[in-house]
Image (cartoon, rainbow, N blue to C red):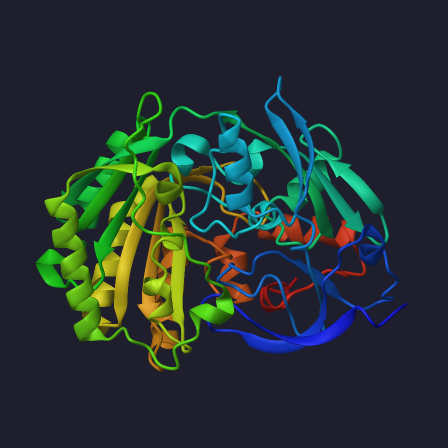
Length: 445
């Protein structure tokens, strides 16, 4: 084994909660992936945008896949494209749109990689209608030192395909992925902004419109309490017909990494600034209830406004996202409001989407509402988040592991219905458990 490709690097989770130094490789040849590292634990890393530490771990060799970012094959008749796992979504979309094509499931930042999306089974702006990332994956090529290169699809090595989609990199290195594209309807969206007075009203409108919208989600002011709790706006986008010649994007995309996000030494978000920013955001969107927007700006909103995440500073933020069944959603929301009113933690914003997922790995599955909560981190927050964990257990809500950097194994085992089966299947596939991260260790895998 040659050590010249290995160095020591410090990694930080995107939310700022986990930071550690470990071995680091940036392979740019297939033979680098195949190097004999003995029994050393390892894990693949994409863009590093997971809020949890899924792409690094203590005493783990991090194999950063950004150099594997090439287009390998394209079938115009089937509208499928094969790309290496380090392909950023923004690069994929620029290429696809030039050919009148589009990929339906896109999380909110263009530097997130295709391999990372497979690993977490990411969702986009309307998972109720489009499902999750894995439903648009035709084939995966994975490398594991014991098994070599393995081709995976819903019809070939289907068991390992299911372990890999939403398996957070634990089955090996995702080397390349074949994706199913669709025709690009237009170069622009019409975005309607619908004010809502509560989370319950938002859920009703999401249930009414999610089948019809091309993307839809809600934003809610986290500083509201009492009768105004949950006041916010639903953003509902539909493709315009034909290309719009007068589309202008006033803002440029900005590059933000986990490290640069934490560049400010202290948080600029406090009760006064959050309250003022949320009130201003609400007013501005009420004054502009319909907006025609470029596809990239609608698809990757955080790339055009990085200040929200940067303002959390080095201390970072905490996000909790859970999938709540429709039959218990009102109960969950009422108990959530009671907890927030009682403990008055620094909640910045809430977001809702309707969700539908099919994977039986560590990703969420089934149907319901995604409820995301963003907090400014302080010393009292961990004890409050334990109360939210208990609420999730009581209501059968499922944790989103990619968004939560601290959820413990006992909560995961009680909130993810496929956890026990995934654990046993993974052990059978890889008895040595070679691919590990801080996340996998924390949740007992």
